[in-house]
Image 1 (tube, each protein chain N blue to C red):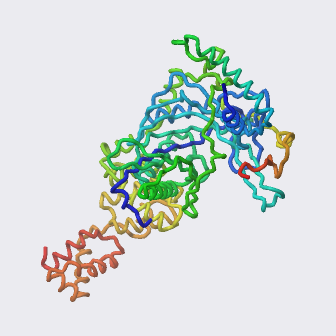
Image 2: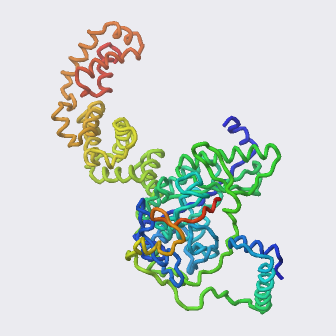
Image 3: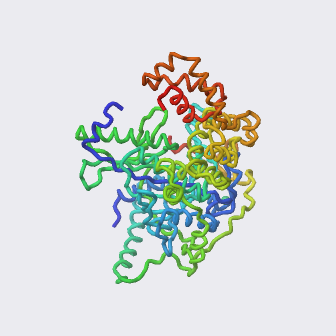
Length: 488
Length: 94
Ligand SMILES: [Zn+2]
């Protein structure tokens, strides 16, 4: 990206997202076939999801409940009465030749998550999975496609944002917030690689300061957070180049290929935006009752945005740390468990250990999987360790060694401290004697420190730490060395 | 009146190939239907909600309990073609 940022003086990106979330109900949206992932094809079908004549859909109660929970978590207004529509298109991934979706009266509208307004939230059904086999493949003759209806009819919630994002990195961060929010509610696996969270982006540029929106392109197939950011970036570069050359941006749908970083237009034949919606006569309207709404509201857990507020206001965590713990569902759950196990330890101290040392040493131990929940370090043990440091029962250096042991084999920090003799040196006479030996052993460094070169204190502190196996408190050691050298 | 281009467009969306004779017949029939709708549109319908459903029911919901799906053999019985447990169709990308 050689021209990066050059055009940013002239154009302003306008980005909106369209997100599909597969709900983790037990059965499909309109029939009782069980949801599955990665199974043999066509083991979960019935006359409804295969669109046999005369079959009639019936709405899954749990899918409605989950969709209401998502809509409420996104602060939406729930429509008192919404209806389903048929979205007509002919493609082999949909045997009815229409998808049941919602159109002019969606389940919910006008919400907000963080800095982004939500345009609408609606319920629909997923399409079947197609595997295209080329002519050169194992199937003879011209290209054909294999259809697996296991996924066909899976409940989906579609979330459409207003075009409130103005930067690819912000779009990525916001999608992560949405993912954590939905994960916290527990209504979807929201796994981008497996397709239970999918994101399309509407991207356009407009001259800086202009009100009117530019012509937008729709980006499909960005099935990871990284690809979303890269795809939007690539599209912005492409549009900026067109505008700079005084060419038109076409309204089109583009497919992002993460391997090549290329954007290819989808052929209009496959993507005719002419769906001839009409009300689905086989399904009656959804009119959420007060009971349905309060049930959905009451079952909402604490959500990332309010959890972040609580961490800032009540636990007095730093902004970045509060955000990290609130927006990362796994890390947040671990922190909450450690807090619950803590015995009077300051939350901030525990937070520091969770987001700092723990994450770092897990990453070091196994490069790819640094999820604390699946590690040997129990939240209980980490809370205990942080407490021992705060009460100065052990030094920070010793605590790091205990943590390394916990990461490797788990266990109880108190026992590890006893076993390895890592308790803080509280007999200052012993520490003073070691400091004296350090100064004697390296007169050169001692002289430089005496002359005011504080960098030279390193080897002396190192000596003491080695001798005490890291049990001494670093600050205390520095203080004693300075005192010894008459710098008190 | 619906013109030839509109009929061809709708036929394309429905993946239908129409002969000249069919095209003519469709134009006439579709025009007749649209004329009837025009007659309805001419009525004064201010304050009348569109009828999307004819039964006065709401919230007909089903418990999220799995039922037994079709045996795969049965599901594939009427497939025009199949391969490896999947329905095989001409590639829409061809
Ligand atoms: Zn089914």
